[in-house]
Length: 251
Ligand SMILES: [Zn+2]
Image (tube, rainbow, N blue to C red; front, side):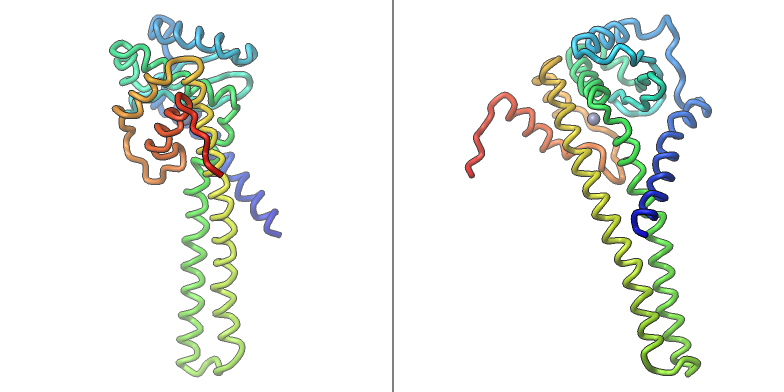
């Protein structure tokens, strides 16, 4: 039963996640970069993709967004296309700090190589969808408990087993759902954060880890309400630093 419910929910999550890029393109929030634009970024990306031995069956398409983000993002890998979305600020950042911008890009291409985009879509949409399910459930259980109290107060339901049992079930069933989905959420979050460290490792290997450290110490992404996507900056910095100075963790 619960696996059917999970499958149903995940189907909706995946559909919604995969539709977002297309919706942004249709609405004009993301536009394909013209052949004449971003020559230096294209060149850097293709050289990096070759160094990182990205599968050749994944041609890279470049897109531009007016978003205030600093980092490019890999939005979708579908039908053999890797869609890299470049925020306008990144073009200027690339001119000012070419090596830092390369480290950021190596991180993103790391996600392509790890085939993280499915996980990315899933994790980004999971929390909001869970909330869509959980909030109505909690309202329904509160309503049921109140209804039982009112009916009991009006003596329409006699004191005894039934109202207590209905009230208890109306709390226990959504409670069990919440515990189950939060467990799934935490698993996805842990996987996602692990994949971020692996992507940072690509920046360390194929670009310059020190430049990525500079990026993490200087650039601030616009605040996210739920930051499932990246681990805290401190953790990422500590992870990259220990790549330079591995320390044996005492057992
Ligand atoms: Zn990332």
